[in-house]
Length: 113
Image (cartoon, rainbow, N blue to C red):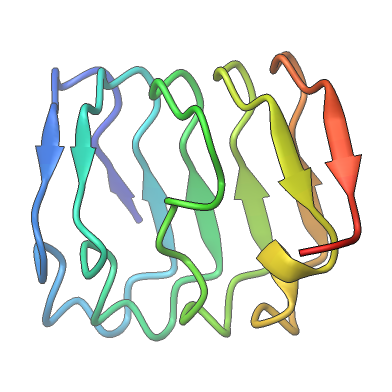
């Protein structure tokens, strides 16, 4: 478990977590993230839980989690997400069991791409 809650993280670059192959939980709660590189979570092949509550997310489309095949729980509550597409965003996450989108600004859920 790596808890980086409220560390004032604004940028997460490519390969930041490279080498943490056995990390099962990453908590980023309360960080004012402004830039999240597409390869930010590469190397986290065993990640089962990702908590990104209050991280200024406005879209899941730019949230690079599609390769996290072991992910079982994703918590992106208390952000500014306004829409998402099913099953597009979650089709590469075959083990996802729990998705928390509470307290967002969701106005549109669609199936079409």
